Length: 147
Image (cartoon, rainbow, N blue to C red; front, side, top):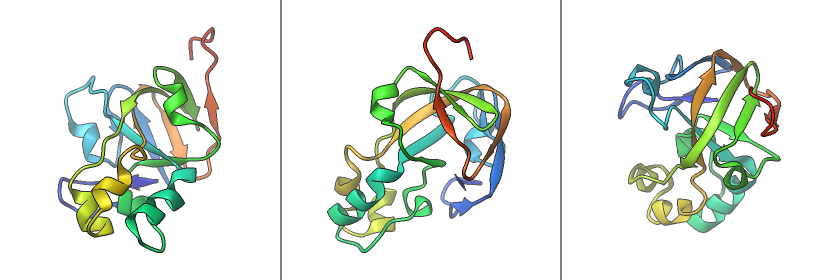
């Protein structure tokens, strides 16, 4: 799990964080924004990390390099846009694509921005408070369940 305490401050990993409904992760700068943003938490698929590294021409990329809060495996994030995910004790709603920013050139070198295009992950809003820890299982909430 990766948090960004402030703008232009290096991202750092944490073992867990509390998801705050309508805000984001307690340790992340996005939680201090006005409630209701659709970009409270950022997610990227673990399966995309080696693809991004290959496209960027680097040996590997880390979640800290990509500045995404959560790395998930086994869930096609693009396919669950508009759906809810239960991660640890929290429920998140996947809201849309998380487009790369110019910081990817700094993190991955020249071409980093282009390497991330189509692989930047998704954004989500937090619907229910809960603890999320590294290794938490990700469940797609069936549409007929409220949370």
